[in-house]
Amino acid sequence: MTYLIDAWLDRPQPYLRILDRETGQVCAVLEEEALDELRDQGDLDVSSLSSSEPGIQKEMVRSLFLFCYARALRPGSELH
Image 1 (cartoon, one colour):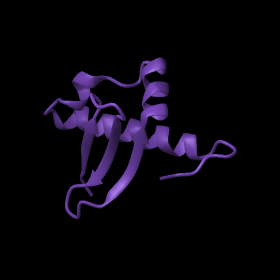
Image 2: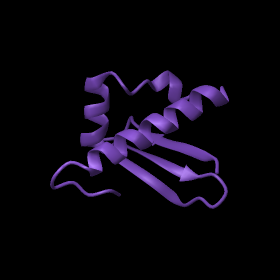
Image 3: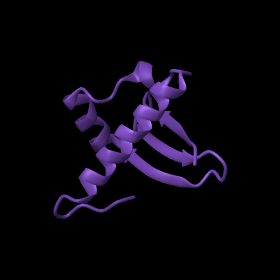
Image 4: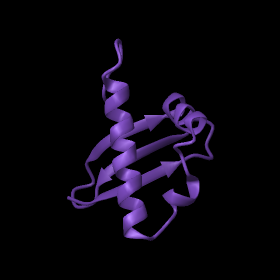
């Protein structure tokens, strides 16, 4: 399965989605609060998001999925 990162970070309500490249299905969504947390941790690298290097993209997708699942495991959280 291959993924596509759809990131709109320069909006009043920024978001980042991970999509299944073949079906277009949304696999994960990060909204403003989660994006702020990633930035604060130093884990959101905008240059990696725009990289065309497959290895860099693969690592970014892996990191984003792990972050999403870690947030979902917190009490009172819900996975998108």
